[in-house]
Image (tube, rainbow, N blue to C red; front, side, top):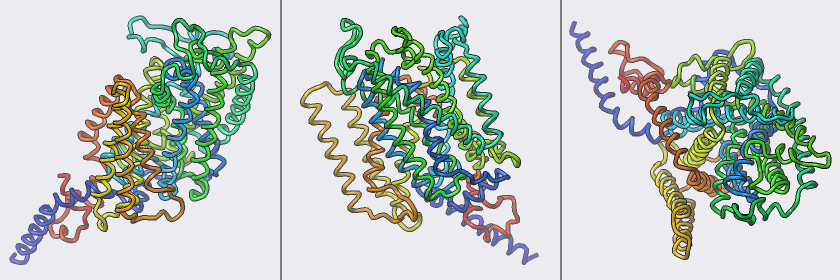
Length: 586
């Protein structure tokens, strides 16, 4: 009896001591790595079967080309040129491409170091913890769903062009629904569901289909570029079709219009992120991922700029069709060139199919990894034992995408997708700096956190001055001062805070300059978006936080730890830190 009482008292004392240490441990977790790579490997076991490692660098380049080219030029170029940048849309694509390439370097370092599915969610979970990863992952999955819905609706427009009639004949209007949500598109729904079946079957077979479609699509792109430069007129770069109503020149909307256009066309580069989500299926991640991710971004940026120049040479910016700019450019042509419109419609349709396939492969793998962490039901994490693909996540997101594509207008989708994508890339750039300069338990994280916060604030101030200050000398002085401050902060951090982690295989060059420039460009492009985009982004982020608080925080892998609170009291002193994490959740 006395022994039992002594044991119970000792257990209670150990429990009280563990509980008393909880606040400091929680604080330490808030600014440290929440999950090690070994833990990520254990989490991967929740999927049951493993994904097969059968992709090579050329598969990744093919996925990158297929995922970006179709969605970019054939969806956003017409709208960006007509409404934001004019002929300077060429520069908009170049700016967005540079920003995407810098972000691609950050993704590549993570993907080589941690070759698991999940992309930004996995990287941020390891670096900043579960909540930041969930908020970012939720926004990214929604970005994929909305961008895929936008691309599917654009497919209807180009398919109609291929057959020589307007896409309105393939859509019908419901008068009872609000404008922007009242055009029903059943063709888009059918395309999304068919591709969902393909990606559920096999990743390798999906790659073969993608390579075939991408090869055909690249031929069409070369055809469009050659014909555009051949048939176009250089005066269209400076003269609008209606000079009385529209401003002339290469920059009809000014420098701000170029950056506004860059923010819109940034949707075009979401495809390379899908490539990084396939790291778990790459045969040689150290060699194949850097070539696949960075190489595809550089190739696509060149193609985008050439196609944007071709489009601007074909027509004045105020005569461009926002929905189908290339095919519509030849619709009214005489001299036997009207057939080119139909050819471009066919080629664009191929490109849109490849971009849909790659993006839907990526979104499923994001949801699969999020399901492994149990911040959403683990049903999404299951990998089918025969197909070795995340069938549940693929099917659910495919149906969800089809439901949005059936009624939502293209313009409503594009703005919301751009803001979410920029936010995710901004977070990954911060994460790669934090991971290089902070070692949990060995270094103080506050110098690095202070740098990231101060540099971001300086970038925000620069952006606000750029967009809202009146033109003139005072504005130039303030912008110059912000630039000097930002460079000084960056240089001080570079000189005073040493790196504690050197990548073993591949790392971002010129650390911390390249990720910092990526941070600035993402913030600057975020400032170019309109107010409704921020309102929608705020509402969705608030919904994600609500889901996390009410469900995810109680069901997640981090919350469960390795043990269970329901144990014998005598076993509490023997438990590791994971048990304390479990106690804190009770």
